[in-house]
Length: 130
Image (cartoon, helix red, strand yellow):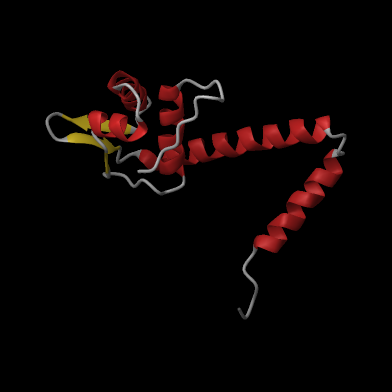
C-alpha cells in the first residue's frame, strides 16, 4: 500500500491517510479482505507518529472501510462495494468541483469545459484494431 503524505497542503496527515485508503478501495487497488499494514509499520514508512496512523485507522473503522481482527491485523471490509462506489463518486465530484472552479477563474465557459471533457474521453478510449 503506497501512500503519499504532504505537509504543505494543509490537510491533516490522518485525513490524508483516510482519504488515500478510501481512494485505493474505490479504485479496486485494495480488495475486500486484504490486510493493511500494522500501525507501527505504516507510521515508520510514512515517518509519522503512530498515533496519527491509529487515528486514521479508527476513522476508517468507524466509516466501515476496515475491520480489526484482534491479534490478527486490520483488513479492508468485505462490504466495501457500495461504499466504494459512493467514495468513487465523491472523489470524482471533488475533482469536477475543482475543475469548474479553475475554469471559472480562467474565464473558460462551461460549454467549452464540457466539450473538452468529451474530447478527452474520446481520445482515451481504446482504438479499434490496435
